[in-house]
Length: 245
Image (tube, rainbow, N blue to C red; front, side, top):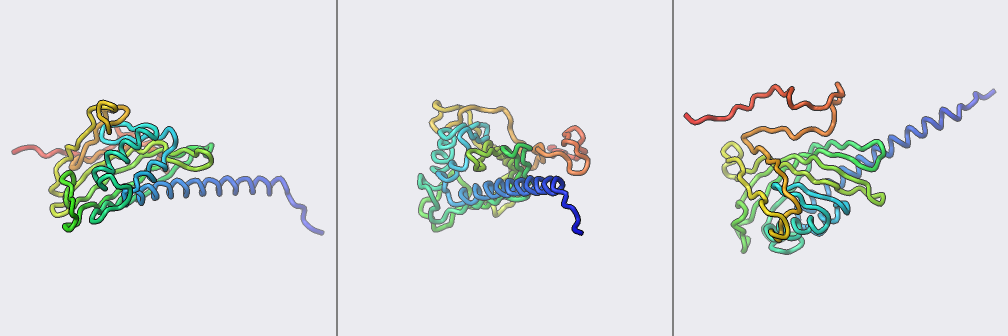
């Protein structure tokens, strides 16, 4: 005599497995998307970078917000392409600019149509001494690091970047290292397009605190054990500034 099969229980288990598999596939797709962004940036493939964004995608960078394909192309295919590859889409001789994307944490929304991701960026860049057109706008050799807190959206069944929010923390010349680096003054955007032909669509007031300051980019995810969101007021760290004398 065979045991009866609980069809309802099996269907419930199957639905659970399908949901978990779909979640894992979405996490993997978002991770891969961000890694692909880094690889394209490595080689100055700015056309390909723009195509990773959703139709309404936007980027927060150096005090400016670049919105939609036109805004993103002004930054990537205009400003950055001009600085790093001399207007050429693709790698150029003697230019190193590796964008490593690390320590990823991806959170998929319950509906499976949007996500948030936190990634650490670590960049090594520079120009070889034999490069015929070394730009004075970049250090000869440098390090850079920061945190992405991005959002993603599934558009037409394909995961794309909705918001790229890169929080750069420090840069340092290779020879002197980060122990001797000065806080980045940077060239923050002060005008919007079209007053600045390569400018952003809007400005934002937030300014990062650069090393040796040690700011925390708010975590998009709750604490994995307590379930509590991160509270900046509870931080018990010492962030003493050096004083003259």
